[in-house]
Length: 416
Image (cartoon, rainbow, N blue to C red; front, side, top):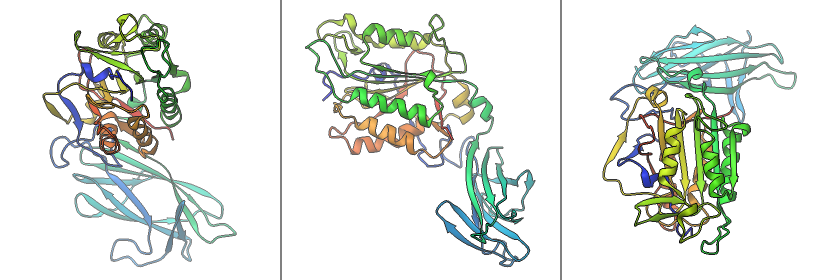
């Protein structure tokens, strides 16, 4: 067990755990709350398939389709045409659907529209690009881009394959979201030099796996992500301080910083403060411990728009007297600064082999969406971690107190 381990983050989190209310495979950043209430932030969902007939009852069948593992097979008719059909769904109201900028006719219910379109199949071996753009009443947008390949000598079928998809939330465009850089500081402490602290097995390998996930799956370029294995206090503080205005790599006002920590920690009842324990720490000597206030002050000094701390250790929470609904609008979630943390649990022991890390990495890698906000990530891991933990640990999500949070949200941007 990670004896003495106290995750720093929640020991200084502001009273009031933020629990996102959404948990869906199509979640967009900050998409929260009751679908029929409050501000509409859901983008419409486009579902496209080949059809033996258009969904309009007055139209006749002119094509035959078959599902394929990597796309949809479409058999052109005698005139060389294929038909696509599908639906556009929204929590409020669908307004329009366009293909390559041309409006399509829609029919059906207000929140669920059907469509059909007849297209000329590309010539043998040729490829055309089909961009489907949907808009709802609140001007939320979504897009799916397909590639349609013409029949070949070996097959009379045309093939439709999804190439990419993206959500655009009202007031939150892709250029704004990707304007800032993504920086990562991933820390794992397994080896302790003083005999008073037992060395651990998994924190360094866990940190390596998190580092790989961030740099390979998300917009954390290796040159902007740092992996610290078994740092001393001086090395750990130095790495954090480097992002402050007086440091070697000061972050800009649009940048994003993620900090991951795994290793021993300690809650000192006399000082009423939590500490990280770097590799040169001693149990009875606070000289090399890294305190809550050390991290808190550093986060406050760093000028990044968003900072997210992921902390994986024992006894990592504090008692929260109030719970708040996480219901800020999506555009505000990104535009406003944030200083938040997700930790492995409250005051419970965490095994050396971390369940928290396992489900954190799993959800980050399996996330199908381009954008994933920290609240959605928390919702996806909290139940699996609790259900698979020997100590029934429950991850905690909240605000880092007095560090500059203004209600915003850290958003992961996935590589495609």
